[in-house]
Image (cartoon, rainbow, N blue to C red; front, side):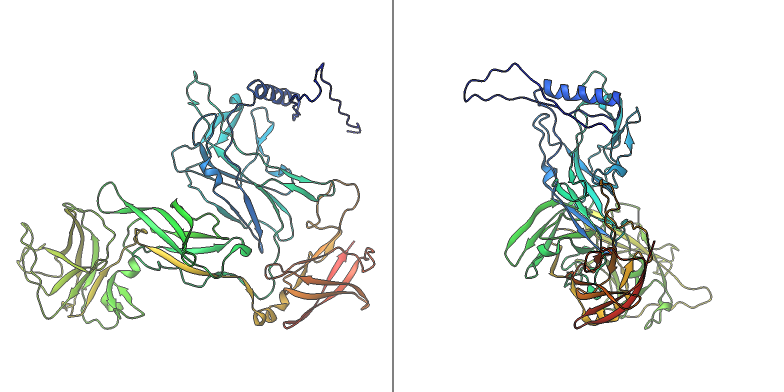
Amino acid sequence: ADVEPFLLFNSGPVSLTPGGVDFFSSAWVFGADESDFFKNRRTAQSIFNADYNFAQPPFLPRLTAIPGDGSVTLSWDTTSVASFDRFTQTFDFEGYKLYKGTDALLSDARLITDLNGTPTFYKPIQQWDLENGITGPVPVLGGEGIFDRGTDTGLQFFYVDDDVTNGITYYYALVAYDSGFGDINDPTSAPIDPQENVFNISTTLAGNIVGVSPNAAVVTPRSLPVGFVEGGTNEDLSSITSGIGTGSAEVKILVEPDIDLSAIYKVNLYSEPAEFGELYSTVEYDIENITTNETVLSRTPFSESSPNVDGFSVIFNNDADVEVIPNETGWVADQGGTNEQYSVNPADLEGFNTNWVAFIRDDTTGSFSQTAFNYELRWVSDSLYTPPRIFGFLREDIPIFAVNATTNELVDILIDDRNDNGVYDPSDDLIINDVVASRRFRYRIRFLVPSGETSVAPEPGNVLRITVTRPFTDGDYFQFSLRSSAIDDSLAASELDRIAVVPNPYVGTSAFEPRTQIEGRGERRVQFIHLPPTCTIKIFNIRGELVRTIEHSGGVSDGSEWWDLRTEGQQDVAFGVYLFHVEAPGIGEHIGKFALVK
């Protein structure tokens, strides 16, 4: 402190012939204290001694940050995933860490210390890593620190941070890291620590941004205009466009200027069979622009969300496990109609005379194996079904047929005569027996007649359905087109009372004011929020004198405007109560007031 820094570089003797070229290296070494300084000096010397030949972090990801209303949407590319370390000769990418701070150094995130208590690592707000079994903390820096390699979360390529306040500037950095190299549990080996990217955000003393590395971003969330209607898809993706998967999808617009409103996109899904049985799992997907016949994202391992593609990301909700859907299983009312209803108790539905209450469960005996098919029992009047001749099961003609409702093929029914009376009763078990690839897929269905009631059998036309969730599989796809965000003028006119000034009252200072390293008061300012896209703001003092006129033109996504608490003549305004008038052509006008308190 109070010492003018002075740097002097000195080297030599060096002999250079005319036109000759030589190279030199220098290191700028800093430390939190003397011990940390000498540790960093040893590291720099080791790097020089190795001729700069050392393990490298993954390729630098490119981060994009889009401000929202009370949120920031961050997205990044997939470049890092394919990183190859020439030193270790491995594809060693492991994951991403996302850091966040309220200053350019992210000092409020530098919380993780080494064993000496020196702040060494940043604490991420989110972390994603490959599902490859490489997890948990490992010792680094010669045992003086700990590095967290993740928890097998799977990768993600966008994140919405809603822990933000409109008007405050946030600084983000996304780093890719590798898994390290060598057996850190073998004391005879010399393991290489996991490496992660560096980042840089450069500012002037006044706090103005002058440089940001590709993996960093500076963003200020802001209010949306009145009348804002968010963009998205023109189609409903709550169910698959075509196929048997029961999951859904959502399209999140990440970078609105990049979206193509003329394109139709198709997301194809791919699966592979399980090691045993007839189940399968979703493993890959790709995205096509079928308007241009172009693949915009080649086959990619399946995850919860896609990377940024043409300004959007697809978020998947995949039913990975096969389970019975209770509210779509049971007796079916209004079958084939637009308002099908289900219940295992027919008394809950209209159109049923039977009083047989159904109990449905998996049959885990014999060669049972689960499958992703729906099944139906259908009562008919014009024919009878004869069960196969299998030892231990009743062979009696019944007016019931079983159908694989997914493939629309007839399947067998076995009758377990539980009371051994030689005839089918509702208390006996009907076993749906669908033989696929020499394995049996079964459900047991038993009926209960309410106590004190006489049994009333189902009538021809009655249907009992078993519906299950199914993962996305080969041939399933979503298809959609995009619509951009827009302003609804009628909605905007009804929301004009949302226009306000923050903070109100303004008491001496505000968290919205930018940080600087310059002595003095710095900039003062308040913010108008939820403005129409285009409007004129007039600010008056309590005597009705015009103090300042501000023209706002924020477009579809920006409903905020700053006022630096200066008059038209750039003089600081006095403390007191002020009135404002907002006029938006074609929408309307609004009057409000706010206070500046010393």
